[in-house]
Length: 452
Image (cartoon, rainbow, N blue to C red; front, side, top):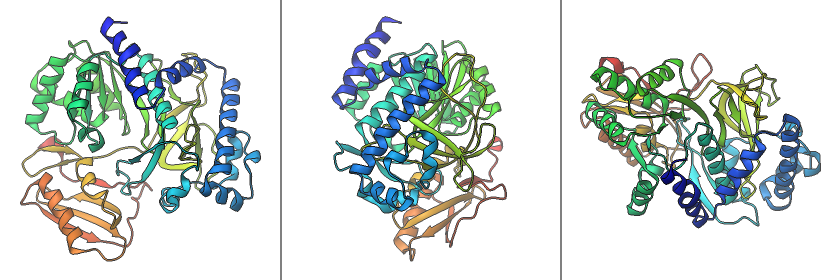
């Protein structure tokens, strides 16, 4: 390991996590041992951790005390992952309704978090220190699979305001020490893309991290400009938060001259799976029970697509047990040639967010508009449709009557990003129907980005 990288990975980053109350270094070392366990021993480890989780939930969490009673089960009946089918699914509506009843009576400090809102209905929830520790450790383990580590030069192309709003002096100092540069993925017009390409050439990152759509767009722009990025020493591009399409993978690999590692997870569900250099998308089975179920909540075998349902085994302070993520995936049957005993996801089918185009031609991530609307309590769900550069429709399902102030807030927020002369029509509707395919698509642009 390179000396400065060793300093960050071995001293500075663990110290930072300890100051936050996390024990990520110890958890990562544990995960690096357990990943090589045979499948039967991993299953036994899962069962042991599941028992601890459900026993605590039954004893300390009002929501699960009521849920177990309604289902006619006790913690003693939930001895191994297959027993979870005795419980109903946990959906976002139930989490919203439960509120503090999902918090364990003996919970330590909790932090508020929320989903990105790309599903059209953001979820606000809480995270305990154990859950955060294990998610950080799982990401750290997966990073090291690729021969890179915290402290190696990194460029992050991201769009969440949770990250982008935290760029104060302390955060800036931390990023400089860890050699991480954050580039905002919301606005991606010609000028921004030129700046991103220049920043990547200066930084010479050993790793990239970001949305696959955003990294692919930077790659296409660099190719169109005739600017090389495959001579910067980049080893791997970690992509997440969206479905990775083959054409995106191809152009990222080609232009950056690196491998692409697909990751799957979310703020609500946790760090669920990550691809190793042999190609397997490994489930973080030590921390997560990942089920794929049919519409009735029955587990499906490998090879059949269904809804992803998560039980996070490190979520005891605010338990997520049989949480329906809304994603669609397929489990794999054959093991990975890398030799790890971790189970595999064959394919994640339903994670994608569109780009939109401002009136001046600036291309932005769909989340740029989602964040305008997602935290408005008056809105239950929504769909954004960009008809052309001059007109955008916003279908909203309100909680009661939609106020004039809320309409104005949506319209002004959208115009700030799309252009002051753009017509933004807010349309209250009773429900947001799925597309013919059965999937929900909450951001749709009819403007061809290639023509901009």
